[in-house]
Image 1 (cartoon, helix red, strand yellow):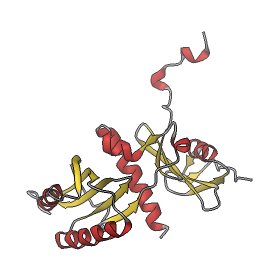
Image 2 (image 1 turned 180 degrees about the vertical axis):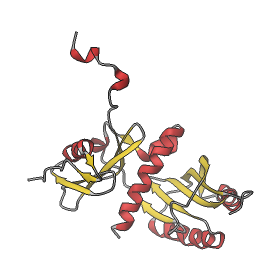
Image 3 (image 1 turned 90 degrees about the vertical axis):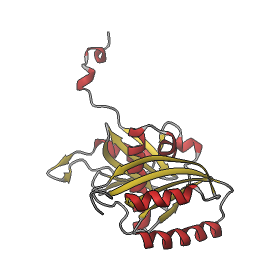
Length: 87
Length: 146
């Protein structure tokens, strides 16, 4: 039996849902709560924004930008986990 | 707005009777904005691959009157009212009819994700609510970028 089988699914956070809104623009939510969005810049990099529409970093691809949005932690209104900048 | 004629938001989708070029869309918007300004109606129009989605905000009697006019417009086919709900305050107060042409993501970039435009046109009530939020956000970001 794998460890996950023992977990109470009701206590597990739902997976984030990402929607493709337009070319180069995705919006994330979880259980109906807005998480943030990622937007492709003119130079091809992807900028991640938190739920308050604050930029949290630029990334080389949209997967990394999405990961930054879904892992950002808000503490006292400040972004606690900053995305790493794309090299 | 009064208790008998409250502020509402109505969302509908339609198919263009023929593909609109930029000039025809501009003409449609000019007429729409003039008409909406006279009725104090605000909202947003999206167009993608021959499909329209429009959000109308205003007094219920004005919005429903406009919807009846649109239903008789031969430029629209397959008109479906997706949602009509009371509003506490306008979401598009600045726009008599904001417009953005919506380019879909390349298939490889869209695979595995929800499609907001399709969810708005064909989703259930919850999907429509989420898709409105997503499209409204995108619209505001693009508008603010000028």
